[in-house]
Amino acid sequence: NAGVTQTPKFQVLKTGQSMTLQCAQDMNHEYMSWYRQDPGMGLRLIHYSVGAGITDQGEVPNGYNVSRSTTEDFPLRLLSAAPSQTSVYFCASSREGLYEQYFGPGTRLTVT
Amino acid sequence: KQEVTQIPAALSVPEGENLVLNCSFTDSAIYNLQWFRQDPGKGLTSLLLIQSSQREQTSGRLNASLDKSSGRSTLYIAASQPGDSATYLCAVLQTKGAQKLVFGQGTRLTINP
Image 1 (cartoon, rainbow over the protein chains, first blue to last red):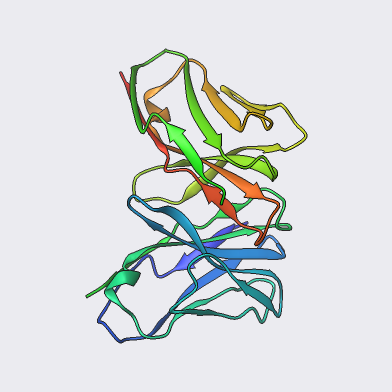
Image 2 (cartoon, chains in turn green, orange; image 1 turned 30 degrees about the vertical axis):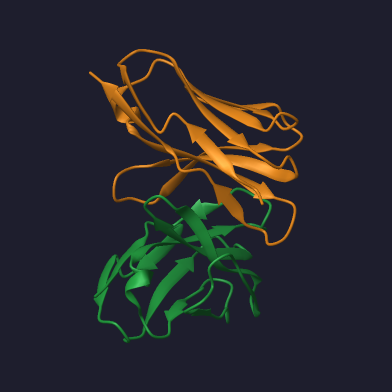
């Protein structure tokens, strides 16, 4: 099992550009989520999904969009990148929301 | 609002010592508490998960305890090794609102050879 995979590992964007961060898991987990990690702020939930076709907002959803068309994939879209979105982004999955959560290796995003 | 605090923020100990990392949370309405390890520039690795009905969990040299009523958890590391150097994060899964983990800021641990 590859576990939770994320691409790309690093990305630099200019303000106003859009992009999609990819996340995939091969453990047949229903629950997937996106967090961002910032110095002094810890990890904060952006969006989550409890199954294919079902998504909901977390703590800091503004500027981000998600969809869940398959169990395996949960992409995160930045609609119009801003410097405030410079961060490290982690995707996580679990069998259901109440079970142990497994994290991907992260995507380090810089917006200039 | 749930708040998770980890003290100390950084800890440096010589190799071979036993040590305890602390985690406290303000709202006892949790499903579980999870301890993670994060190496610099890497993702989070799950170490131990304690359900709200449990008192402790063990994995190898690691032992995590949970006292839900007092809002505290500890991670005990026995016979520390330089390879244990990393940042340790605790997170609680709250029962109210979104199914999200609320993280502490972490304890940066350095084990000196």
